[in-house]
Amino acid sequence: MTLELKATIAERHLDVSLSVGPAETLAVMGPNGAGKSTLVQIVAGLLKPDAGQATLGARTLFRTGPAPLWLPPHARGVGLLAQDPLLFPHLSVLDNVAFGPRSKGLGRAESSAVARHWLGEVDALELAARRPAQLSGGQAQRVALARALATDPELLLLDEPMAALDINSAPFLRSLLKRVLAGRRAIIVTHHVLDALMLADRIIVMDRGRIVESGPTAAVLAHPRSSFAASLAGLNVLTGSVTGTSVQTADAGLVAGRLTGGFAGAGTPADGGTEGLAAFPPSAVSVFLAPPQGSPRNCFPVAVTELEPHGDHIRVRAGRLAADISPAAMADLGLEPGSAVFFVVKAAEVAIYPA
Ligand SMILES: Nc1ncnc2c1ncn2[C@@H]1O[C@H](COP(=O)(O)OP(=O)(O)OP(=O)(O)O)[C@@H](O)[C@H]1O
Image (cartoon, rainbow, N blue to C red; front, top):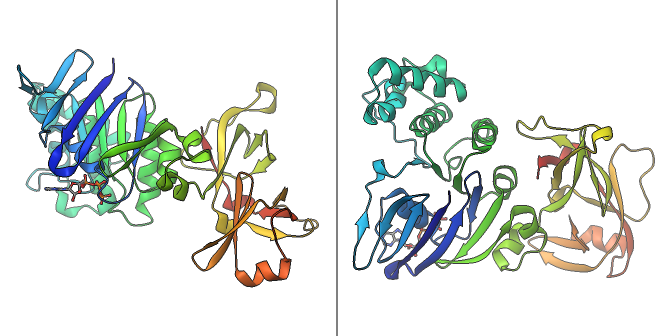
């Protein structure tokens, strides 16, 4: 059972076609105005395209043409979590979450039980009796997630769910999403490459209403073809097998880091470990002419392939890895393409994710 969608909207220069498999999470990225939210609204049933059709398994969500059809949002089997939680202000948290099951015809007691289950899943059971006005932004977003899940949607749409959260609440919601998205079909719009890496199996990059790139998240970031993906791909991403808090990679040896966001699946050397990846920003990488002595850091011997200005820094590229250093440091090191150097990064700066 797959989501198949094709849609155009002339006024927004939108022309997309995509499919999402049953247990697949798709990340949608792209610059402002690319059409990401428009895509989500079409699937949710909030916006009618000029032409196209969509099916979710056996169900037709909409179809234009000689025999047009338009399923209203509540009949689509689709749950939406947007930037704004949009809870009903006059209902308790419990009743907000029970609203979907009630609308689907479940009795009061049964709907409450479903709501309690999902509030438990998002660690918000203790908030059940509160009104939305008594919740923090992060709590409200967790309740909104429970409300979306309580309808047992065949497709969960997440439109920048972390965007309005403060820096302390976002990681908690991210690891919750990691847990609830496992084995579930979802589309997540995000501006953060780490969300795409951590939450999605596949990524599409949109630009001016079109899909300009698509593929497994780590592969798109490792070999970006669009300039937008290339700008994201400044992040260093190494894939391999995770054992303990390290990733054994084919091209950079053993990379030590810290396990990130609810990822408890580290294997043991005996079983070959779990597939995963290590990610760290170029700003976390220092460049040395000789390996630093006696330091518990990751140290990669590399040859410089390219030097390019990047804001106030110089981005030093060495094959798949990149480091950002100051122009003064570059002058001190006397770097040029071909220079043999050591890229050094602290384990604390390396985030380890499931692939
Ligand atoms: N309500 C609207 N009426 C008409 N045009 C709109 C409306 N909302 C968005 N657009 C236009 O549709 C295009 C796609 O916008 P959309 O909001 O889908 O982009 P986005 O990728 O989600 O951007 P952002 O990252 O800024 O949220 C843009 O050209 C935008 O100006």
